[in-house]
Length: 403
Ligand code: ARG
Image 1: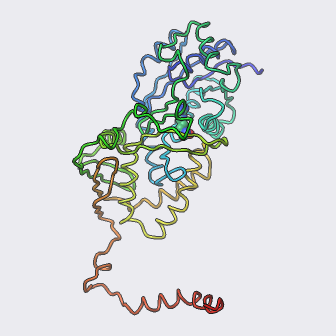
Image 2: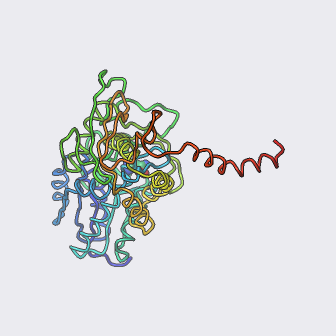
Image 3: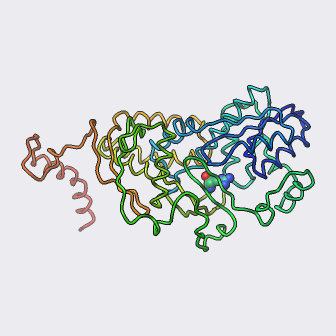
């Protein structure tokens, strides 16, 4: 084993990463710096400081990354209308490269040559963390305790905690808990009963949305303004990206918007089933498509839709900091120059529907499309020739086939 003198650990303060912290200190006998990111997971972060202190950590970093998360990761992704496998808004996937970026930044700052994370050996998150670290600083060594230590079961994990006087909260004593990942964009829940896709998810799984059945019986009308593809205000009130997403999460949660029960294909090879709640993101996707519908040229819009699954898959698979993701991002960003204006939506029992849209950059021409007499020069005879030429090869083809 090459000598490691300092490690920066991505530390949530939860039981698993507390055990990892102890294990790193014992195994490598070196200083461990903890890094706890505030991504709007809605958890108190100060307990993480207290726990790290108790474990003798001298350098404790708790960093508020919410604004960077929404501005530089979530919004750029939403410009693409990104969905993995047609449904997943990538709430966990998009957070990992940001955490990795700061792990690397802190490692450089404190002169550490290794970083560590608490992702298990079966998931996507390990891939995302490590590909991002590779892309940002190939000299940094990555330690993934879940793949290295001999702990193979929940029972062994708890035994290790007991042995090292790591407090185990009473709700963590029994069987393995759900695997939950939360941030400003979503909450994801996996594991336990959800591992059987034939089982209906129990209602208590949901944390930030009401059951649409219990949502208000009166619809709520909201307006979202966009500037160059990004949302900037809700109901006429300008907001920071974080405040805006928080506001929409509240509205969406109340109306039961953004629940998803999905069986997905992990990059690593297996299928997994998860429950996602992405209230604000779901509203923003509908609204963004609404504003794009009047501001994007047809070919531009269709090209975006063609590359979208590819772009989403890159994010899902952990290639945020790869050249091909950056190339696609440049294309997407370029398309957003005129994606400005206002979208009105109706929130009602689990749905966010666009009901109207306006834009100073609109390409929509009522004059052109109208069934009434139009002032714009449009010669109906042109359509005749247009169809005749488009039909030319079809007529040849049909004649050959003997139809
Ligand atoms: N399956 C989702 C994804 O790969 C969610 C992962 C959530 N992570 C977790 N540690 N629970 O993006």
